[in-house]
Amino acid sequence: MYPNIFNIDHLFCSLSKEQERHIFGYVGLLSSENIDSLINEVETTLDGHVDSRVAKKRIFSILLESLQNLSAYIEQDGIDEFRDALVCVNRDDESYYVYVGNFIMKRHYPSIESRIKIINALTNEQLRQLYRSILDYGSVTKTGGAGLGFIDVAKRSDEVVLHQYEDINEDIAFFTLKIVVAE
Image (cartoon, rainbow, N blue to C red; front, side):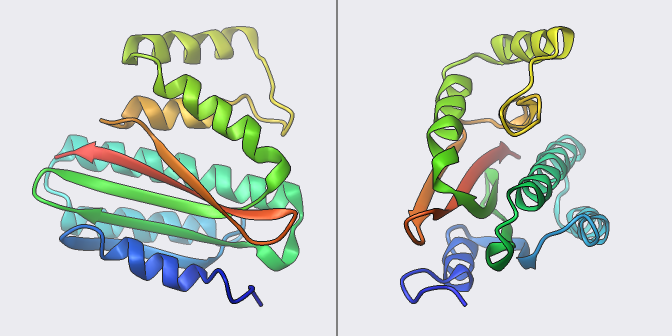
């Protein structure tokens, strides 16, 4: 199991209490086999808790992109004992807060952090142009993706994408993103 210094369930409990209302949460194995049912559950839950059609669409798109990326990353990196992921959606009177997290190989963190810093510095128009450029010219990252996931999430966020990671051992960390969507 996980070392005593980090517990994904404790992190989930902490995140689910950060805002006034908790809407959706999941902690557990994330794989290509269970992602469809999780996405259906997310959609049903959002239908019952998010009034704004625009906000609902943005939250769903963020979660869909994030879950697909998490699943692909987890399966690609092959860290079997660390295959759990975290998904949490909260809200207050003005915004929705989407948290996603997974275990990553620490060697990937500098690249991830660099990409997030770049996208956080761009305007929405610049994000659209970067997204289009990557689609047009087909650049591929070291992990085999086009790097569009973070850009897509940032385009739908109303604030910068916040991130943090917590060391698990010398090779693995738990990486968490926080994305804000206005009501």
